[in-house]
Image (cartoon, rainbow over all chains, first blue to last red):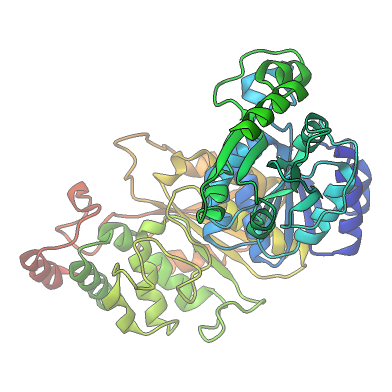
Length: 293
Length: 256
């Protein structure tokens, strides 16, 4: 996804003179061609994330389209007030692209983990949140949304689904239809959901945007009233949207996501997946339990 | 000698008294600076306050909003009568300014340390667009406690934002918490041109604002919090307080 990110942004910098890239001393080598080609619009702004977001707001006031990029905890948690006040409150346009989703930087410890990004950003009215599940999906989603005059967060992940889908910004994709339950798979959770549900007559809805949330697709594909929510960040961020969407009928919900605690182990992201239950077996078990209810 | 801004101070006190809100001493601290900016310096058209070729002023210490509102109204950005609604539920004029409600307000500030980075971004944006307009940001000395002020000072100097000026309203309000010492030297060490003035002397303010430099410029404006009211001058009890009817009469009488 990171390689695609560089490729996409290089192309947009070439096509759109309003695009300005701000790097938080991350990805500088990868963007070396962009630095050479567009020195007036590509900046390694330094390790000062709060001011980078404020500066990006100023660029936006000038009609430019800022694209700020660094590691998730610094882009979101460090700068949360700037994202709220400088962008969402002021109704300015901007793009914030993170790497290091959840515990991608597992061995670096909790300071570099960020499973809380989506939940935090969801609490800021007006912020769009996009989670591509594969590289080419990032390209499609970014091109559709980067100039839409709203603040938009793109969450890049080291983990990827094996297949790219023809995704559309703000619209969920129906991967398959079934009668027993509906699985909502967000971003990179799709791969796990697909394998875990093999042979089961269930619906799988693939969400690449958490905000705006596509209520219509859920409403039209949830006749079973049994919903399994699979999220790659702290569990439950989408529950309010699901409850609001399904408010007219009784439903059963199971949820799989990162548990709300500090993940103080190191190792690899795969080891963290195992330890928190991001496994085919666990997802299938939860789904079967839900179906039997 | 009577200050030409006595009328604006009366408007500010009246708006605060009516609403039960407002930071009057902070407004009085910056009022002379804002008046010189809008009267003599800024290229802004009140009829088209978002014109592409305008200068920008950002009140980073947004709690001094009453001063900005009084000056903007006096300069015809909106009717003076709007001040009568200050702080009311449906008013365009709140305790901190909102760029999406108030004509002439460039940035919605309030939480300290936000306006300066935004101003640096506006200045960088103008440079990218090869426009020669100027950006002025006003911060308080208390606000200079915020790390983003110094991050922005670094950014502006590194990117040679000579179109950016920062005015520090140095009324020593933060001395009781975290004294800022020699702010001028601090900015100079960050690569800025610096000058120190009397922030209530219009000639000194004007001369400092028009001084050309090839670096970003900071103006350390020595000011008095509550300037223009002997009751309020340097009196922390008045920081966020609106006058009672009795106090209102005293203030209106003594203002200069």
